[in-house]
Length: 243
Length: 308
Image (cartoon, rainbow over all chains, first blue to last red; front, side, top):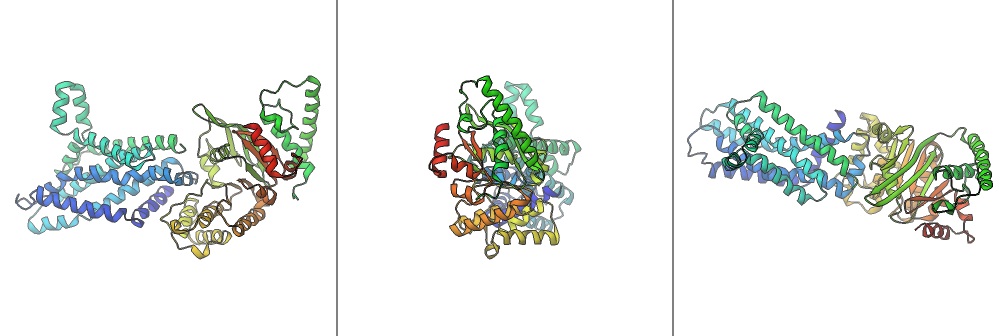
Protein backbone atom coordinates (compact mmCIF):
# COMPACT_ATOMS: atom_id res chain seq x y z
CA UNK A 1 0.00 0.00 0.00
CA UNK A 2 2.80 2.35 0.96
CA UNK A 3 4.69 1.55 -2.22
CA UNK A 4 1.60 2.19 -4.32
CA UNK A 5 1.11 5.62 -2.80
CA UNK A 6 4.81 6.51 -3.21
CA UNK A 7 4.71 5.58 -6.90
CA UNK A 8 1.41 7.41 -7.34
CA UNK A 9 2.74 10.49 -5.57
CA UNK A 10 5.82 10.65 -7.76
CA UNK A 11 3.79 10.16 -10.90
CA UNK A 12 1.26 12.82 -9.98
CA UNK A 13 4.03 15.28 -9.20
CA UNK A 14 5.52 14.49 -12.62
CA UNK A 15 2.31 15.66 -14.33
CA UNK A 16 2.62 19.01 -12.64
CA UNK A 17 6.37 19.28 -13.16
CA UNK A 18 5.79 19.29 -16.92
CA UNK A 19 3.35 21.37 -19.00
CA UNK A 20 1.21 18.23 -19.41
CA UNK A 21 -0.99 19.12 -16.46
CA UNK A 22 -1.64 22.70 -17.48
CA UNK A 23 -2.31 21.91 -21.12
CA UNK A 24 -4.60 19.04 -20.26
CA UNK A 25 -6.62 20.92 -17.67
CA UNK A 26 -6.97 24.08 -19.75
CA UNK A 27 -8.03 22.21 -22.89
CA UNK A 28 -10.39 20.02 -20.91
CA UNK A 29 -12.09 22.99 -19.28
CA UNK A 30 -12.37 24.93 -22.54
CA UNK A 31 -13.80 21.95 -24.42
CA UNK A 32 -16.25 21.07 -21.68
CA UNK A 33 -17.33 24.69 -21.30
CA UNK A 34 -17.82 25.26 -25.01
CA UNK A 35 -19.74 22.05 -25.51
CA UNK A 36 -21.95 22.60 -22.49
CA UNK A 37 -22.83 26.21 -23.16
CA UNK A 38 -22.94 26.30 -26.96
CA UNK A 39 -23.80 22.87 -28.32
CA UNK A 40 -25.59 21.84 -25.16
CA UNK A 41 -27.76 24.98 -25.00
CA UNK A 42 -27.21 25.17 -21.28
CA UNK A 43 -29.08 28.46 -20.89
CA UNK A 44 -31.85 28.02 -23.47
CA UNK A 45 -33.01 24.72 -22.01
CA UNK A 46 -34.23 26.54 -18.95
CA UNK A 47 -33.57 23.53 -16.72
CA UNK A 48 -31.44 23.59 -13.61
CA UNK A 49 -29.44 20.43 -14.19
CA UNK A 50 -26.07 19.45 -15.58
CA UNK A 51 -27.25 17.16 -18.36
CA UNK A 52 -25.61 19.15 -21.17
CA UNK A 53 -22.38 19.03 -19.18
CA UNK A 54 -22.53 15.30 -18.46
CA UNK A 55 -23.66 14.33 -21.96
CA UNK A 56 -20.46 15.51 -23.61
CA UNK A 57 -18.11 14.35 -20.89
CA UNK A 58 -17.58 10.75 -22.15
CA UNK A 59 -16.58 12.09 -25.57
CA UNK A 60 -14.24 14.71 -24.24
CA UNK A 61 -12.66 12.09 -21.99
CA UNK A 62 -12.46 9.69 -24.91
CA UNK A 63 -10.10 12.11 -26.61
CA UNK A 64 -8.19 13.44 -23.62
CA UNK A 65 -7.80 10.47 -21.28
CA UNK A 66 -5.68 8.40 -23.70
CA UNK A 67 -3.49 11.51 -23.95
CA UNK A 68 -2.72 11.12 -20.25
CA UNK A 69 -2.22 7.40 -20.35
CA UNK A 70 -0.17 7.19 -23.53
CA UNK A 71 2.99 8.14 -21.68
CA UNK A 72 2.29 5.93 -18.66
CA UNK A 73 4.40 2.95 -19.74
CA UNK A 74 5.47 3.80 -23.28
CA UNK A 75 7.64 6.65 -22.07
CA UNK A 76 9.17 4.63 -19.24
CA UNK A 77 10.17 2.02 -21.74
CA UNK A 78 11.52 4.45 -24.28
CA UNK A 79 13.60 6.31 -21.71
CA UNK A 80 14.67 3.10 -19.96
CA UNK A 81 13.44 4.38 -16.59
CA UNK A 82 11.25 1.29 -16.38
CA UNK A 83 14.44 -0.66 -15.70
CA UNK A 84 15.15 1.58 -12.73
CA UNK A 85 11.57 1.55 -11.47
CA UNK A 86 11.08 -2.20 -11.68
CA UNK A 87 14.43 -3.04 -10.09
CA UNK A 88 13.38 -1.17 -6.98
CA UNK A 89 11.90 -3.47 -4.35
CA UNK A 90 8.30 -3.15 -5.53
CA UNK A 91 6.07 -5.57 -7.37
CA UNK A 92 4.85 -4.87 -10.87
CA UNK A 93 1.29 -4.82 -9.62
CA UNK A 94 2.18 -2.01 -7.22
CA UNK A 95 3.80 -0.02 -10.02
CA UNK A 96 0.82 -0.53 -12.34
CA UNK A 97 -1.67 0.40 -9.65
CA UNK A 98 0.36 3.39 -8.47
CA UNK A 99 0.62 4.85 -11.93
CA UNK A 100 -3.05 4.23 -12.62
CA UNK A 101 -4.11 5.90 -9.37
CA UNK A 102 -1.94 8.92 -10.14
CA UNK A 103 -3.60 9.32 -13.53
CA UNK A 104 -7.00 8.86 -11.93
CA UNK A 105 -6.27 11.44 -9.25
CA UNK A 106 -5.20 13.78 -12.01
CA UNK A 107 -8.53 13.29 -13.79
CA UNK A 108 -10.29 13.89 -10.49
CA UNK A 109 -8.46 17.20 -10.14
CA UNK A 110 -9.48 18.20 -13.66
CA UNK A 111 -13.08 17.25 -12.89
CA UNK A 112 -13.02 19.14 -9.62
CA UNK A 113 -11.99 22.26 -11.50
CA UNK A 114 -15.30 22.22 -13.33
CA UNK A 115 -16.92 23.39 -10.09
CA UNK A 116 -17.98 26.79 -11.53
CA UNK A 117 -20.67 24.99 -13.52
CA UNK A 118 -22.20 23.73 -10.29
CA UNK A 119 -22.11 27.23 -8.85
CA UNK A 120 -23.74 28.55 -12.02
CA UNK A 121 -26.58 26.08 -11.97
CA UNK A 122 -27.07 26.64 -8.24
CA UNK A 123 -27.26 30.35 -8.84
CA UNK A 124 -29.81 29.97 -11.63
CA UNK A 125 -32.13 27.48 -10.00
CA UNK A 126 -32.53 24.68 -7.55
CA UNK A 127 -30.79 21.65 -9.07
CA UNK A 128 -30.93 18.15 -7.69
CA UNK A 129 -27.60 18.08 -5.92
CA UNK A 130 -27.81 14.32 -5.44
CA UNK A 131 -27.98 13.74 -9.17
CA UNK A 132 -25.04 16.09 -9.69
CA UNK A 133 -22.98 14.23 -7.10
CA UNK A 134 -23.76 10.83 -8.61
CA UNK A 135 -23.10 12.26 -12.07
CA UNK A 136 -19.63 13.29 -10.95
CA UNK A 137 -19.10 9.82 -9.48
CA UNK A 138 -20.08 8.34 -12.85
CA UNK A 139 -17.71 10.73 -14.61
CA UNK A 140 -14.90 9.59 -12.36
CA UNK A 141 -15.72 5.95 -13.06
CA UNK A 142 -15.82 6.42 -16.81
CA UNK A 143 -12.48 8.24 -16.60
CA UNK A 144 -11.13 5.29 -14.61
CA UNK A 145 -12.41 2.85 -17.23
CA UNK A 146 -10.74 4.79 -20.04
CA UNK A 147 -7.57 5.15 -18.01
CA UNK A 148 -7.32 1.42 -17.39
CA UNK A 149 -7.75 0.71 -21.10
CA UNK A 150 -5.22 3.41 -21.94
CA UNK A 151 -2.66 2.06 -19.51
CA UNK A 152 -2.88 -1.39 -21.10
CA UNK A 153 -2.41 0.16 -24.55
CA UNK A 154 0.56 2.11 -23.25
CA UNK A 155 2.12 -1.08 -21.91
CA UNK A 156 1.72 -2.62 -25.34
CA UNK A 157 4.14 -0.33 -27.15
CA UNK A 158 7.03 2.02 -26.59
CA UNK A 159 5.60 4.48 -29.08
CA UNK A 160 3.37 7.06 -27.45
CA UNK A 161 1.47 7.91 -30.64
CA UNK A 162 0.53 4.28 -31.14
CA UNK A 163 -0.48 4.07 -27.48
CA UNK A 164 -2.72 7.11 -27.94
CA UNK A 165 -4.40 5.92 -31.12
CA UNK A 166 -4.98 2.42 -29.77
CA UNK A 167 -6.31 3.91 -26.53
CA UNK A 168 -8.84 6.09 -28.36
CA UNK A 169 -9.86 3.22 -30.62
CA UNK A 170 -10.49 0.70 -27.86
CA UNK A 171 -12.23 3.23 -25.62
CA UNK A 172 -14.38 4.26 -28.57
CA UNK A 173 -15.50 0.66 -29.03
CA UNK A 174 -16.78 0.55 -25.48
CA UNK A 175 -18.29 4.02 -25.65
CA UNK A 176 -20.02 3.52 -29.00
CA UNK A 177 -21.56 0.23 -27.88
CA UNK A 178 -24.31 2.29 -26.21
CA UNK A 179 -25.44 4.01 -29.37
CA UNK A 180 -28.23 2.88 -31.72
CA UNK A 181 -25.91 3.05 -34.71
CA UNK A 182 -23.90 0.18 -33.26
CA UNK A 183 -26.59 -1.72 -31.36
CA UNK A 184 -29.00 -1.69 -34.30
CA UNK A 185 -26.35 -2.89 -36.66
CA UNK A 186 -25.35 -5.68 -34.32
CA UNK A 187 -28.88 -6.82 -33.52
CA UNK A 188 -29.68 -7.02 -37.22
CA UNK A 189 -26.60 -9.05 -38.05
CA UNK A 190 -25.38 -10.82 -34.93
CA UNK A 191 -27.98 -10.67 -32.16
CA UNK A 192 -25.61 -12.44 -29.76
CA UNK A 193 -23.03 -9.73 -30.15
CA UNK A 194 -25.67 -7.06 -29.61
CA UNK A 195 -26.37 -8.53 -26.20
CA UNK A 196 -22.66 -8.60 -25.37
CA UNK A 197 -22.21 -5.04 -26.58
CA UNK A 198 -25.10 -3.86 -24.46
CA UNK A 199 -23.50 -5.33 -21.37
CA UNK A 200 -20.22 -3.59 -22.04
CA UNK A 201 -21.84 -0.31 -22.98
CA UNK A 202 -20.08 1.93 -20.50
CA UNK A 203 -21.87 5.11 -21.55
CA UNK A 204 -25.27 3.53 -20.79
CA UNK A 205 -24.09 2.74 -17.32
CA UNK A 206 -22.61 6.18 -16.95
CA UNK A 207 -25.91 7.79 -17.94
CA UNK A 208 -27.64 5.99 -15.10
CA UNK A 209 -25.26 7.78 -12.74
CA UNK A 210 -26.04 11.17 -14.30
CA UNK A 211 -29.73 10.56 -13.64
CA UNK A 212 -28.90 10.00 -10.02
CA UNK A 213 -29.10 6.22 -10.05
CA UNK A 214 -26.20 4.47 -8.35
CA UNK A 215 -26.67 0.75 -8.69
CA UNK A 216 -24.44 -1.86 -7.18
CA UNK A 217 -24.43 -3.66 -10.51
CA UNK A 218 -22.85 -0.68 -12.27
CA UNK A 219 -20.33 -0.18 -9.50
CA UNK A 220 -19.33 -3.83 -9.74
CA UNK A 221 -19.13 -3.52 -13.51
CA UNK A 222 -16.76 -0.55 -13.41
CA UNK A 223 -14.62 -2.14 -10.70
CA UNK A 224 -14.26 -5.38 -12.66
CA UNK A 225 -13.70 -3.52 -15.91
CA UNK A 226 -10.89 -1.45 -14.40
CA UNK A 227 -9.50 -4.49 -12.58
CA UNK A 228 -9.40 -6.53 -15.76
CA UNK A 229 -7.54 -3.90 -17.78
CA UNK A 230 -5.09 -3.24 -14.98
CA UNK A 231 -4.42 -6.95 -14.70
CA UNK A 232 -3.83 -7.00 -18.44
CA UNK A 233 -1.46 -4.06 -18.02
CA UNK A 234 0.53 -5.97 -15.39
CA UNK A 235 0.81 -8.97 -17.69
CA UNK A 236 1.86 -6.80 -20.63
CA UNK A 237 4.41 -4.87 -18.58
CA UNK A 238 5.86 -8.09 -17.30
CA UNK A 239 6.09 -9.54 -20.75
CA UNK A 240 7.37 -6.52 -22.61
CA UNK A 241 9.32 -4.49 -20.09
CA UNK A 242 12.69 -5.63 -21.33
CA UNK A 243 12.03 -5.70 -25.08
CA UNK B 1 49.06 -5.63 -7.98
CA UNK B 2 45.98 -7.54 -7.06
CA UNK B 3 45.07 -7.34 -3.39
CA UNK B 4 43.63 -10.80 -3.75
CA UNK B 5 46.09 -13.60 -2.99
CA UNK B 6 46.78 -15.06 -6.36
CA UNK B 7 47.23 -18.76 -5.96
CA UNK B 8 44.31 -19.02 -3.61
CA UNK B 9 41.57 -17.31 -5.49
CA UNK B 10 42.52 -18.14 -9.00
CA UNK B 11 42.43 -21.89 -9.03
CA UNK B 12 38.98 -22.41 -7.62
CA UNK B 13 37.58 -19.89 -9.96
CA UNK B 14 38.97 -21.77 -12.88
CA UNK B 15 37.34 -24.87 -11.50
CA UNK B 16 34.05 -23.11 -11.05
CA UNK B 17 34.33 -22.13 -14.68
CA UNK B 18 35.07 -25.70 -15.67
CA UNK B 19 32.01 -26.90 -13.81
CA UNK B 20 29.71 -24.39 -15.35
CA UNK B 21 30.74 -25.46 -18.80
CA UNK B 22 28.98 -28.76 -18.25
CA UNK B 23 32.02 -30.12 -16.47
CA UNK B 24 33.63 -31.52 -19.58
CA UNK B 25 35.88 -28.70 -20.62
CA UNK B 26 39.44 -28.50 -19.47
CA UNK B 27 39.36 -26.30 -16.41
CA UNK B 28 42.79 -24.85 -16.91
CA UNK B 29 42.53 -23.72 -20.50
CA UNK B 30 40.41 -20.69 -21.04
CA UNK B 31 40.01 -20.72 -24.75
CA UNK B 32 39.01 -24.32 -24.90
CA UNK B 33 35.80 -23.61 -23.08
CA UNK B 34 34.58 -21.53 -25.95
CA UNK B 35 34.52 -24.27 -28.53
CA UNK B 36 31.86 -26.86 -27.92
CA UNK B 37 33.15 -28.95 -30.81
CA UNK B 38 36.36 -29.80 -28.97
CA UNK B 39 37.19 -33.50 -29.31
CA UNK B 40 36.42 -35.50 -26.20
CA UNK B 41 39.26 -35.69 -23.75
CA UNK B 42 41.26 -38.87 -23.44
CA UNK B 43 40.49 -40.88 -20.28
CA UNK B 44 43.94 -40.27 -18.89
CA UNK B 45 43.52 -36.57 -19.30
CA UNK B 46 40.08 -36.80 -17.77
CA UNK B 47 41.33 -38.40 -14.58
CA UNK B 48 44.13 -35.91 -14.31
CA UNK B 49 41.55 -33.16 -14.53
CA UNK B 50 39.29 -34.65 -11.93
CA UNK B 51 42.30 -34.89 -9.64
CA UNK B 52 42.91 -31.24 -10.30
CA UNK B 53 39.26 -30.62 -9.60
CA UNK B 54 39.43 -32.35 -6.26
CA UNK B 55 42.59 -30.60 -5.32
CA UNK B 56 41.18 -27.29 -6.32
CA UNK B 57 37.95 -27.87 -4.49
CA UNK B 58 39.83 -28.57 -1.29
CA UNK B 59 41.67 -25.35 -1.83
CA UNK B 60 38.42 -23.56 -2.42
CA UNK B 61 36.92 -24.77 0.82
CA UNK B 62 39.83 -23.24 2.62
CA UNK B 63 39.55 -20.01 0.75
CA UNK B 64 35.81 -19.93 1.31
CA UNK B 65 36.31 -19.34 5.00
CA UNK B 66 35.09 -15.92 5.87
CA UNK B 67 33.75 -15.44 2.37
CA UNK B 68 30.05 -15.32 1.80
CA UNK B 69 28.77 -15.95 -1.67
CA UNK B 70 26.23 -13.22 -2.33
CA UNK B 71 25.57 -13.62 -6.05
CA UNK B 72 24.93 -17.01 -7.59
CA UNK B 73 24.18 -17.41 -11.26
CA UNK B 74 23.48 -20.86 -12.66
CA UNK B 75 23.12 -21.68 -16.33
CA UNK B 76 21.59 -18.32 -17.18
CA UNK B 77 20.38 -18.29 -20.78
CA UNK B 78 18.44 -15.71 -22.74
CA UNK B 79 17.17 -16.23 -26.25
CA UNK B 80 15.44 -13.67 -28.40
CA UNK B 81 13.80 -15.79 -31.07
CA UNK B 82 16.60 -17.66 -32.77
CA UNK B 83 19.26 -15.38 -31.36
CA UNK B 84 20.95 -16.48 -28.17
CA UNK B 85 22.07 -13.37 -26.29
CA UNK B 86 23.33 -15.14 -23.18
CA UNK B 87 24.28 -18.77 -23.34
CA UNK B 88 24.52 -20.83 -20.19
CA UNK B 89 26.41 -18.37 -18.03
CA UNK B 90 27.27 -19.42 -14.49
CA UNK B 91 29.37 -17.74 -11.83
CA UNK B 92 29.33 -16.71 -8.22
CA UNK B 93 30.54 -13.57 -6.54
CA UNK B 94 31.48 -13.47 -2.87
CA UNK B 95 31.68 -10.61 -0.43
CA UNK B 96 34.94 -8.75 -0.90
CA UNK B 97 35.09 -9.38 -4.62
CA UNK B 98 34.82 -6.86 -7.41
CA UNK B 99 33.98 -8.73 -10.57
CA UNK B 100 34.73 -6.96 -13.81
CA UNK B 101 32.40 -7.97 -16.58
CA UNK B 102 34.10 -7.49 -19.92
CA UNK B 103 33.13 -8.12 -23.47
CA UNK B 104 32.50 -6.47 -26.80
CA UNK B 105 29.26 -4.63 -27.48
CA UNK B 106 26.37 -7.01 -27.83
CA UNK B 107 28.19 -9.82 -26.04
CA UNK B 108 25.43 -10.13 -23.46
CA UNK B 109 26.81 -8.12 -20.54
CA UNK B 110 23.78 -5.92 -20.02
CA UNK B 111 21.40 -8.80 -20.67
CA UNK B 112 23.11 -10.86 -17.97
CA UNK B 113 22.98 -7.95 -15.55
CA UNK B 114 19.33 -7.32 -16.31
CA UNK B 115 18.52 -10.93 -15.58
CA UNK B 116 20.55 -10.75 -12.38
CA UNK B 117 18.56 -7.68 -11.34
CA UNK B 118 15.33 -9.57 -12.03
CA UNK B 119 14.35 -7.16 -14.78
CA UNK B 120 14.60 -9.58 -17.65
CA UNK B 121 13.14 -13.04 -17.39
CA UNK B 122 15.72 -15.66 -18.33
CA UNK B 123 14.89 -18.35 -20.87
CA UNK B 124 16.67 -20.82 -18.63
CA UNK B 125 18.73 -20.84 -15.48
CA UNK B 126 18.48 -19.01 -12.20
CA UNK B 127 20.10 -16.14 -10.38
CA UNK B 128 20.16 -15.65 -6.62
CA UNK B 129 21.11 -12.62 -4.61
CA UNK B 130 21.95 -13.38 -1.01
CA UNK B 131 20.01 -16.61 -1.41
CA UNK B 132 16.88 -14.95 -2.82
CA UNK B 133 15.87 -16.15 -6.25
CA UNK B 134 15.42 -13.05 -8.41
CA UNK B 135 12.38 -14.51 -10.13
CA UNK B 136 10.44 -16.22 -7.35
CA UNK B 137 11.52 -13.97 -4.49
CA UNK B 138 12.19 -10.83 -6.49
CA UNK B 139 11.26 -8.12 -4.01
CA UNK B 140 13.51 -9.59 -1.30
CA UNK B 141 16.34 -9.96 -3.81
CA UNK B 142 15.96 -6.39 -5.05
CA UNK B 143 15.91 -5.08 -1.50
CA UNK B 144 19.53 -6.15 -0.99
CA UNK B 145 20.59 -5.12 -4.46
CA UNK B 146 21.89 -1.79 -5.68
CA UNK B 147 21.52 -1.71 -9.45
CA UNK B 148 22.73 0.86 -11.93
CA UNK B 149 21.00 0.11 -15.24
CA UNK B 150 22.75 0.69 -18.54
CA UNK B 151 22.77 4.39 -19.35
CA UNK B 152 21.73 5.30 -15.78
CA UNK B 153 18.11 6.17 -16.60
CA UNK B 154 16.45 8.59 -14.18
CA UNK B 155 13.29 10.68 -14.20
CA UNK B 156 14.46 13.84 -15.92
CA UNK B 157 11.89 16.24 -14.53
CA UNK B 158 12.74 15.43 -10.91
CA UNK B 159 15.42 17.21 -8.94
CA UNK B 160 18.39 15.13 -7.82
CA UNK B 161 17.21 15.13 -4.21
CA UNK B 162 13.61 14.56 -5.27
CA UNK B 163 14.61 11.50 -7.21
CA UNK B 164 16.78 10.10 -4.44
CA UNK B 165 14.07 10.78 -1.86
CA UNK B 166 11.66 8.83 -4.03
CA UNK B 167 14.01 5.86 -4.17
CA UNK B 168 14.69 6.08 -0.44
CA UNK B 169 10.99 6.09 0.35
CA UNK B 170 10.45 3.02 -1.82
CA UNK B 171 13.29 1.42 0.08
CA UNK B 172 11.34 1.97 3.27
CA UNK B 173 13.15 4.91 4.85
CA UNK B 174 11.31 7.80 6.46
CA UNK B 175 11.92 10.99 8.35
CA UNK B 176 15.39 11.75 9.62
CA UNK B 177 16.89 8.52 8.36
CA UNK B 178 15.58 9.19 4.88
CA UNK B 179 17.19 12.61 4.88
CA UNK B 180 20.51 11.29 6.16
CA UNK B 181 20.53 8.45 3.62
CA UNK B 182 19.99 10.90 0.79
CA UNK B 183 22.64 13.27 2.13
CA UNK B 184 25.08 10.40 2.47
CA UNK B 185 24.48 9.18 -1.08
CA UNK B 186 24.87 12.75 -2.38
CA UNK B 187 28.15 13.07 -0.52
CA UNK B 188 29.48 9.72 -1.76
CA UNK B 189 28.87 10.65 -5.37
CA UNK B 190 29.73 14.36 -4.97
CA UNK B 191 26.36 15.60 -6.08
CA UNK B 192 25.77 18.21 -3.37
CA UNK B 193 26.36 21.13 -5.70
CA UNK B 194 23.58 20.10 -8.09
CA UNK B 195 21.17 18.54 -5.66
CA UNK B 196 18.28 20.91 -6.42
CA UNK B 197 18.64 20.85 -10.19
CA UNK B 198 16.33 18.83 -12.40
CA UNK B 199 18.17 15.72 -13.53
CA UNK B 200 17.54 16.47 -17.22
CA UNK B 201 19.56 19.68 -17.00
CA UNK B 202 22.66 17.85 -15.77
CA UNK B 203 25.64 16.75 -17.81
CA UNK B 204 26.16 13.10 -18.67
CA UNK B 205 28.66 12.55 -15.89
CA UNK B 206 26.33 13.99 -13.27
CA UNK B 207 23.43 11.90 -14.55
CA UNK B 208 25.55 8.79 -14.26
CA UNK B 209 26.38 9.72 -10.68
CA UNK B 210 22.70 10.24 -9.87
CA UNK B 211 22.13 6.66 -10.98
CA UNK B 212 25.07 5.56 -8.88
CA UNK B 213 23.76 7.46 -5.85
CA UNK B 214 20.45 5.67 -6.27
CA UNK B 215 22.22 2.31 -6.26
CA UNK B 216 24.23 3.17 -3.14
CA UNK B 217 21.39 4.75 -1.21
CA UNK B 218 20.55 1.78 0.99
CA UNK B 219 24.14 0.59 1.39
CA UNK B 220 23.29 -2.75 -0.24
CA UNK B 221 25.48 -5.84 0.23
CA UNK B 222 25.27 -6.51 -3.51
CA UNK B 223 26.05 -3.92 -6.17
CA UNK B 224 25.50 -4.48 -9.87
CA UNK B 225 26.72 -1.53 -11.90
CA UNK B 226 26.38 -1.45 -15.67
CA UNK B 227 29.17 0.79 -16.95
CA UNK B 228 29.43 3.00 -13.86
CA UNK B 229 32.25 5.14 -15.25
CA UNK B 230 30.94 5.62 -18.77
CA UNK B 231 30.77 9.30 -19.63
CA UNK B 232 32.75 10.45 -16.62
CA UNK B 233 35.86 12.59 -16.95
CA UNK B 234 39.17 11.14 -15.74
CA UNK B 235 38.86 12.74 -12.30
CA UNK B 236 35.36 11.47 -11.81
CA UNK B 237 36.40 8.02 -13.00
CA UNK B 238 39.13 8.02 -10.42
CA UNK B 239 36.68 9.02 -7.70
CA UNK B 240 34.21 6.29 -8.62
CA UNK B 241 36.99 3.72 -8.66
CA UNK B 242 38.18 4.85 -5.26
CA UNK B 243 34.62 4.59 -4.02
CA UNK B 244 34.31 1.04 -5.33
CA UNK B 245 37.62 0.10 -3.73
CA UNK B 246 36.47 1.53 -0.42
CA UNK B 247 33.25 -0.45 -0.51
CA UNK B 248 34.90 -3.66 -1.63
CA UNK B 249 35.39 -5.37 1.75
CA UNK B 250 31.71 -5.22 2.71
CA UNK B 251 30.12 -5.98 -0.62
CA UNK B 252 29.93 -8.23 -3.62
CA UNK B 253 30.26 -5.95 -6.62
CA UNK B 254 29.79 -6.62 -10.32
CA UNK B 255 30.73 -3.89 -12.77
CA UNK B 256 30.60 -4.05 -16.52
CA UNK B 257 33.05 -1.97 -18.44
CA UNK B 258 34.71 -1.39 -21.77
CA UNK B 259 37.67 0.22 -20.15
CA UNK B 260 40.28 -2.44 -19.66
CA UNK B 261 42.43 -0.34 -17.33
CA UNK B 262 39.50 -0.48 -14.94
CA UNK B 263 40.12 -4.19 -14.48
CA UNK B 264 43.56 -3.49 -13.05
CA UNK B 265 42.32 -0.48 -11.14
CA UNK B 266 39.43 -1.99 -9.18
CA UNK B 267 38.65 -5.58 -10.03
CA UNK B 268 39.74 -8.60 -8.06
CA UNK B 269 38.55 -10.83 -10.83
CA UNK B 270 37.34 -10.50 -14.39
CA UNK B 271 34.96 -12.42 -16.58
CA UNK B 272 35.25 -11.99 -20.31
CA UNK B 273 32.08 -12.73 -22.21
CA UNK B 274 31.79 -13.05 -25.97
CA UNK B 275 28.77 -14.05 -28.03
CA UNK B 276 26.90 -14.79 -24.83
CA UNK B 277 29.45 -17.21 -23.41
CA UNK B 278 32.06 -16.89 -20.74
CA UNK B 279 35.45 -17.18 -22.40
CA UNK B 280 37.60 -16.34 -19.40
CA UNK B 281 37.19 -16.06 -15.66
CA UNK B 282 40.42 -15.08 -14.00
CA UNK B 283 42.22 -12.55 -11.86
CA UNK B 284 43.62 -9.51 -13.62
CA UNK B 285 47.14 -10.89 -13.27
CA UNK B 286 46.15 -14.14 -14.92
CA UNK B 287 44.48 -12.26 -17.73
CA UNK B 288 47.71 -10.41 -18.38
CA UNK B 289 49.53 -13.73 -18.62
CA UNK B 290 47.24 -15.07 -21.31
CA UNK B 291 48.95 -13.18 -24.07
CA UNK B 292 52.70 -13.04 -24.57
CA UNK B 293 52.51 -9.27 -24.82
CA UNK B 294 50.99 -9.06 -21.33
CA UNK B 295 48.63 -6.35 -22.50
CA UNK B 296 44.95 -6.62 -21.62
CA UNK B 297 44.01 -5.15 -24.98
CA UNK B 298 45.65 -8.06 -26.74
CA UNK B 299 44.17 -10.59 -24.36
CA UNK B 300 40.72 -9.11 -24.86
CA UNK B 301 41.06 -9.21 -28.62
CA UNK B 302 42.42 -12.73 -28.58
CA UNK B 303 39.61 -14.04 -26.36
CA UNK B 304 36.67 -12.27 -27.95
CA UNK B 305 37.68 -12.66 -31.59
CA UNK B 306 38.21 -16.36 -31.15
CA UNK B 307 34.71 -16.71 -29.77
CA UNK B 308 33.04 -14.67 -32.46
